[in-house]
Image (cartoon, rainbow, N blue to C red; front, side, top):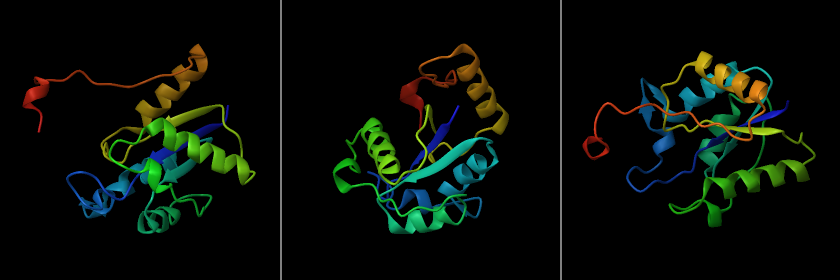
Length: 147
């Protein structure tokens, strides 16, 4: 099974400009996702961004470098993740890269994750032949109390 590890990292957010390049433990936020995705076997990593800075930074870590930039029409606050994935897979198809059987989404804004949890999810997805799989964690507090 060919899996696209899709990392959505647009340059602006409502609250924090260049959020994906802000430092967490002396590394840009996106670094933590790239570091984990590099450890995954048999996945093709792809960073979808509308920022040349994020693209250039990410290309230092990716096995296959690319010049893709997400179009501004699908890079806004109200843009759908699905549209970004669709645009990226169409771009990859036009560039004659591999076609994929599944997409794994790793968001840079969730930097604390364990490689074994991702691998376990991939194995469950493959073994059960699911069409989709989402991970979640039970909240300890009421959503209104989240910061």
